[in-house]
Image 1 (tube, rainbow, N blue to C red):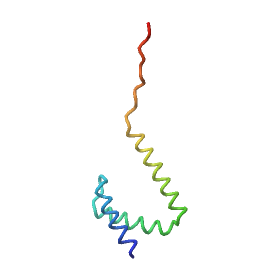
Image 2 (cartoon, rainbow, N blue to C red):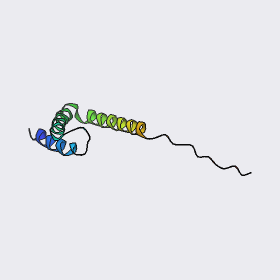
Image 3 (cartoon, rainbow, N blue to C red):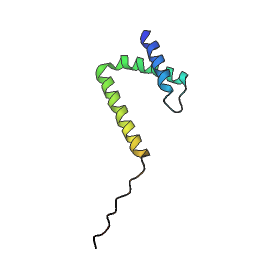
Image 4 (cartoon, rainbow, N blue to C red):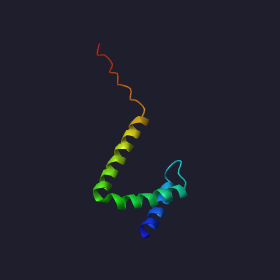
Length: 76
């Protein structure tokens, strides 16, 4: 019970930093995350964190504009 309350509060606060999620939705996500963490255990939690980090890096890479190659002037 206490984990759900703390998860809800943390989710509501985290929703302030995310686009498209209001405080109520963030609270529900926090409650779900607390229940999921309890079911997964430490190994599953580490796997979920690693997967989330990989998805974040992939999305950041897709949103980054393509770099133009540097053109060096000829020495002639």
